[in-house]
Every structure is written in structure tokens, then in C-alpha cells.
Image (tube, rainbow, N blue to C red; front, top):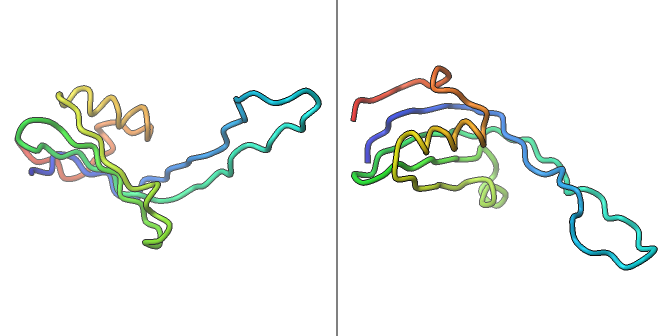
Length: 100
């Protein structure tokens, strides 16, 4: 695999979603999911046939599983769009671009 882009120490946020399911009449509305703010390294890698967006959370090992993930995309453009949508990052924010 080849590292193409690296975005170190990105501030990420998850949670805050309101309840969207059915509730019985007169039921109290559940609270939104807790908001969690954390730091992560985000990178884009080429695996020989597609592009991996990798998010590695800076949390203790027992807490980071839900916030550490990867996604595979067929094109670099779609992978970059995913990085922009999920993390609000632009290619100009990266460090360490490596030629393919």
C-alpha cells in the first residue's frame, strides 16, 4: 500500500443525533446521543486497485474501536469526497503527499 495523503490530529465529533424511531403516545422523548469529540489521524492510501480512507482515533485502545475505521473506494476522487464530507478536510490541509 502507498500513503497518498495524511491529515494528522484531526478534531472529529460524533453523536448528538436526536431520536428518530417510533414512540408510544405520551412517552417521554429520549435524549440525543452523547456528543464525543476526539482527535484522529486520517489518511488516504492506494492498495493497488482502490483507495482506502483510514481514520485512526487517538483514544485508549478499549474506547477507540467505534472511531477507528477504514473505507474502500474505487476512485481517488470519491475517496477525497468522502474525506471532505466526513471530516470537513480539503486536499490543501494534508501533509505528506506521495506520488502514485
